[in-house]
Image (cartoon, rainbow, N blue to C red; front, side):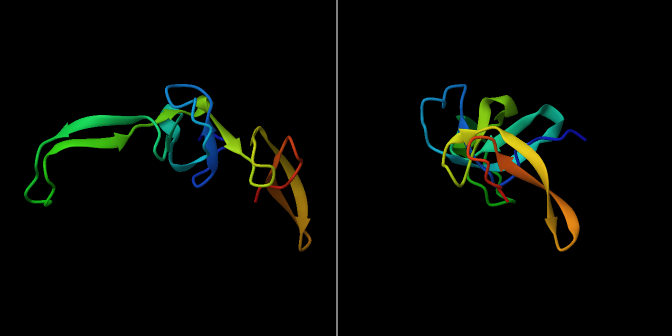
Length: 112
C-alpha cells in the first residue's frame, strides 16, 4: 500500500491546476491510492449529463460534481501557522509508548 502524507479530513491548498489561483484551504474528502489522486471539496468541478433513474428517485439533467486531482498538486495547510507546508514525521513519548506523529516543517508544531 502506498503511503501518503495527506490524510482524509486535512485542509489542503491546491498549488497546480485550474483552481490553483484561489488561496483558500479546502478539505480532503477522499484519497484514491490506486491512482495517486485526492478528492478535494469544491475543486476541479465538472458538469456531467445524468440520465434520470426512477428506481433510485434520481432526477436527470446536468449536474456539477468534483473530480479527483493528482496528489502532487495539493499541499497540506498547517493548523498552527495557517500556511501550506511540507510534512515530517517524528516519534513522541505518550504514556511510556512511542507514537509516530506528523509535524509542520515551517513552524515545527505537531499536526495531530
